[in-house]
Image (cartoon, rainbow, N blue to C red):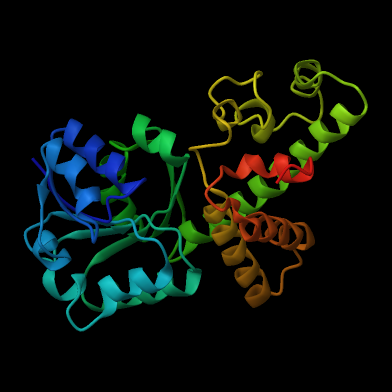
Amino acid sequence: MTTIAFIGVGNMGGPMARNLLKAHDSVVAFDVSPAALKPVAEAGGRAAATALDAVKSADVVITMLPAGHHVRSVYLDDESILTAARTDALLIDCSTIDIESARAVHAAAETAGFDFLDAPVSGGVGGAEAGTLAFMCGGSGTAFARAEPVLAKMGKRIVHAGGAGAGQAAKICNNMLLAVSMIGTCEAFVLGEKLGLAPQKLFDIMSAASGQCWALTTYCPVPGPVPASPANRDYTGGFAAALMLKDLKLAQSAAQNAGAATPLGAEAAQLYALMAARGHAGMDFSGIIQMLRGIL
C-alpha cells in the first residue's frame, strides 16, 4: 500500500484524494479548511494537523493549491515539504500556477535530491469526481515514470509534456484556447438566436460541420443539446469563470515574457474580467453567453 500525502483537498483535490482511497492507497490529507478535510476523512483518509505532519512518512506527496505563492510557500519556506519529506519521496504539484514558480520549485527540489513533477489537470470537478482527469506533466523522465501509475488512479490521460514547467505551459495554452473557443461558440448561439434559429437546430448543424469543437459538443453553453453541461443547471458547477480568468492571466503573463502575440487570448481575459467584475465570478465559464445576451 502506497502512503500518499495530499495537501489541498478542496473542490478538485478532495475528489482526487478520495479516488486514491478507492484504489486502496493510504491517504494523509491536510487543508487549511477543516470542512474540506471532512469528506476525505469520512472516506477513510487521515486528517493531518499540519502539512509537515502529512508528508513526513509519505511515499508520494501531491499538492493541489490555488496559486503560485501558495506552492512556493509549502515547498520553499524554511520549514517546508522539502525539509520535512523523506528524500526518496516523489513530489507532484497538480496546481495550475505560473511557469516561473513551477521552475523555482523544480530547481529547489532537484537541489534537495527529490524527484518532482509539475502536473496540472484538465477536466474540472466532474473529471476529478469520475477519475477521468487529464494530467499535463513537466519534469524528468524518471519522475514521470514514478508518477504515472499514481496519476492513473485519478485520471485517464497522462502526458509527459517535457521538462520543468512544461506541464504548466501546456495547461495555460490549452485553457486559453478553451476560453477563446467558448466565447466564439457563445457568440454563434447568440447570433443564431437573433436570426431566428432554434438552438437545438443550430447545434445539430454546427456539431457536424466545420465549427465543431469541444466547447460546443461536450460543454454546450445552451440548455438541451448536451444534458451534462452546466447550461442545464443555470450555469452552476463546472469550471468557474474566476478560475478561467486566473488561467487567462497566467497565459497573458507567459505570453508577455515569451514575446508571443495572443490578441484573442487577451480579449478573452478582458471579457472574463468583466464577467467577474459584474459579480459572476462563481458562475461556470460557459455562462459568459448570458453576458453576451445582455442578461448579466
